[in-house]
Length: 214
Ligand code: DX5
Ligand code: ZN
Image 1: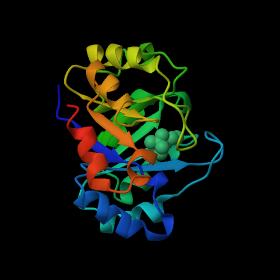
Image 2 (image 1 turned 45 degrees about the vertical axis):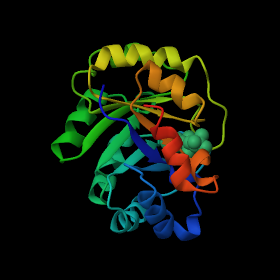
Image 3 (image 1 turned 90 degrees about the horizontal axis):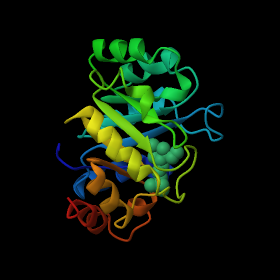
Image 4 (image 1 turned 90 degrees about the vertical axis):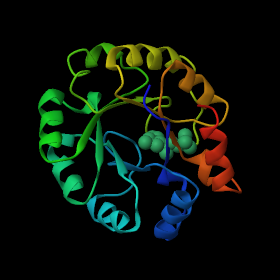
């Protein structure tokens, strides 16, 4: 299994101090910075767009993992790549031509991943599993931080790990030091955590507590 990576989600950080928050979680051991992009259509919430990602890029010394929770990712993927995204993940539910979009993202020099909502079967990635850099399994419904982990998703993580070999399998939503051990055991190697890390007194301790579960 590929190496465990911890990806703090900025959604739970102080948006007025994004540069400092990035520096602090990187100093505490973050491997990736997870950036949640929501458009008020695909998700009920609205967050940030390409200009903010371009600013974040200047502060981050680790890859930016940009999670597009937007309708029509085909239209916007390139803007986020130009803004400095290192990994783009988009939702299977929001894209009619995922095979084409993965190819296009990769041809622009960016890693590409596909995201599955809790209600979406892993069957949709059968013909994409060999080409994606990452599969992101939502362990909550997208839209908000601080939601409760959906236990049935552990089974999906296992199934996806069997399908993708040593590619990255990421989980997102409700991850803490209890739920993380369940998903790691099932085969996840990239853990997104928002509330658990940014809501803690010590980012260092929170990240270490996830890392020792490997
Ligand atoms: C949810 C986002 C997540 C969110 C996770 O729609 O995709 O990345 O920030 O937050 P926690 O870790 O608080 O569940
Ligand atoms: Zn996310």
